[in-house]
Image (cartoon, rainbow, N blue to C red):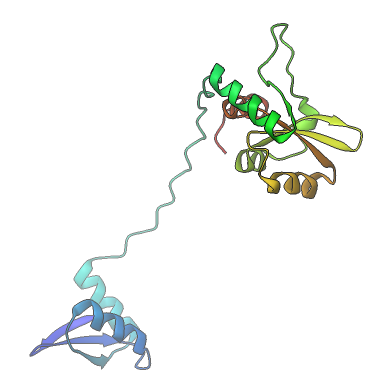
Length: 182
């Protein structure tokens, strides 16, 4: 607690005479010589209250409820072509994840539930089907090897990667898990 000036030196009251780090910080902040006087912790607290007023009570604001956000717009023809070429280049299958005209969803919800939402969003992947001993996982970047390792670590099933356009992946994740941010 700053107490007074003694010439060019700042006089500071401390309750622990061995706390050289605190004195060093005050010296750096004040950019002047600091002299230390020893005081009781209660006296320092009362002086701070007289100087700065009572300590504010901590406020714990209730957390705002999560807001639903609109899903991203559908993928453009150029994005779909790019994803299809990327799949061909990687030697993988290309899939589209938009609901079919008859209303059926190409994503198997039981398969999608095997990976948590946070992982799907963080690693940009979505399980879309289950095969015997394998999980079909849609990704927008087939050259990221970590995605396959993550799927195997979480499910103990070998992934079969398929390529999807980035916006279709975002829309499918929002459709399967809901659009609540989380």
